[in-house]
Amino acid sequence: MNYFRTLTFVSSKYLLATLLVVVGHFVGWAQRRPHAAFIPPTSYDERTRNPTLRYEPGGRPGSFRGLDGAWHPVQIADWLPDRVYLNESGNYYRAYSPEEMTAFVLSNSDTVITVAGVAPGKLGQLHTAFGQQLFRGAGMQLVDVTDPVTSLISVFIRPHKLLLRKNAGDWILLPKQKAVLQPLLLTLLADDPALVARLQAKRVGRWQVQRLLTEYADFRTTQFLQTAAQPRP
Image 1 (tube, rainbow, N blue to C red):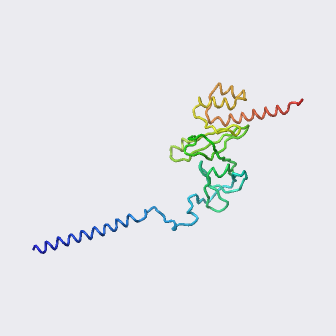
Image 2: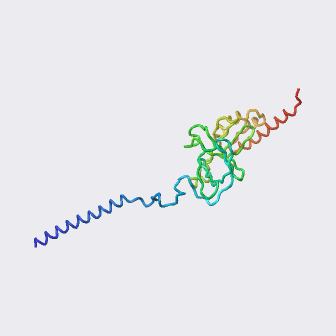
Image 3: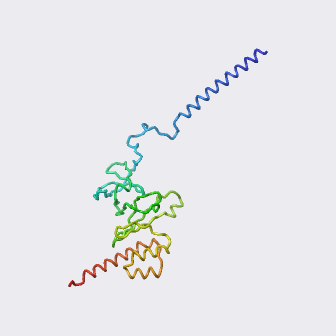
């Protein structure tokens, strides 16, 4: 009887040891095995290895202005404040940063320019960004730098950043508060008496600035034409 008990005890020990070895093997193999989401570099098409590449079945014709000032025809798939997807032909588009060009134009006449030299923190994490040009004239330039939509809330509350500069000076981020915006506009539009009087009588929001700039440009044009029409001594 003792013999069988001893044999059973020894067999159980060997069985347990064997089981631990087998389990240890599979645990070690599982730890060495790549994660299910990992895709080995050699398992997909060569053209998609570059993370800056994007497949897009349709793009829009446009052009971009390089750092040398020359314009080049391209196809444009999409753009965000930190990138634009361009190609010359085919369905694979490469992402380019604002540092690689000064502007690009879409076929629908939308002009997007590179906004640089903005005070740190005004563009979030970006130091340079693409922005849609809303107005340009009379020495003024107004640009909308819109953050990408990241949630349902941001669809309704679009995080626009409006930047304005005069005579190619520094970009100024337009404040959302009317009380802070008013003195800024009074300084920038100081040579138009009619606009100054209106701004002193009533504060305006930043979304009215584009209309004010249009009126300011008309004033400057009229002033120039009247001055040019005067007889010279």
